[in-house]
Image 1 (cartoon, rainbow, N blue to C red):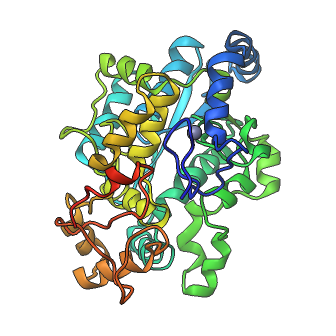
Image 2 (tube, rainbow, N blue to C red; image 1 turned 60 degrees about the vertical axis):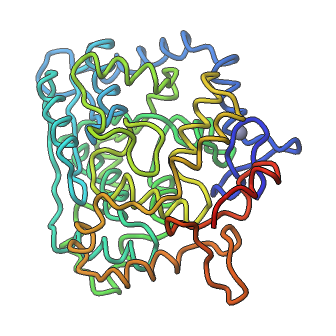
Length: 389
Ligand SMILES: [Zn+2]
């Protein structure tokens, strides 16, 4: 594994590009974000766009904001309404298994003065898709990852509200193909490329899924999109995306972080709160597949924004990620109707053997708590040798 010399992102991250000096493209984006981009101009540009979509006589909503109740979506909604005077309609795609804090934050949004539509897909089919996601794709939240992108677009078409405001552009903030990094819009090809592992919903028809059960997961047709003129923009293209500031602002307004501290696999207590499987389990899969997890993403942002130095981040990242998520494990087994043996065998099946230590029989070596050990943590030799097996 190679690690970026500026942050701690390994080159195993899909789509990540390293330059000839071993600097990742997310670090290059951060330089642009903090030093080059004229944010005043971008904000002005946004104001002009919003004016074009504004419903001046108050007879309808003038844009859609997809919300999970997470701090990002709350910030998006709040900014559009209270800074730009828009009247957004919020669309929430109900996750696999909503958490208490997730529910609380959705209520918080309505208390803040927003109308909301909740889209809840048929749970029998949802569970079937979650099983497919877990066993075949190593993504416990697969239906959720599709639905959060299709449901708002469906609502946009049905309600004839052309403008959808998404949050940050993850390719810009976290790294991705150059052609996508500076994009300010999201479309069907983005969805299929980055969220669906190259799958199309129609591929599921051949696997025993009934077309009529998957309506919320179908991306509207080109004709439907064209008729309404649906346009999806990233707010993060127009407004400097600063998580720490946004969290502070949302907390002041009454938004709740995770009640028991950092979410499993994370360093912060403010991301991936809404679904029981997304915080720990989904992010643990990422660790098994790529050797890093949510804490690495969050610590990289700490470094790029100048709040932490690289050595400190390297030193602490192991304390936050790579541990088997236990909090909702019993609930998950029950949800999928799967045994603990099947569960662990599936995790092992998706674990990248090039990243983790194995013995002479090609079995994984684990530390005293049963967690896997990476071959390379980006430490110096001596530090690496201190890990207890
Ligand atoms: Zn980097």
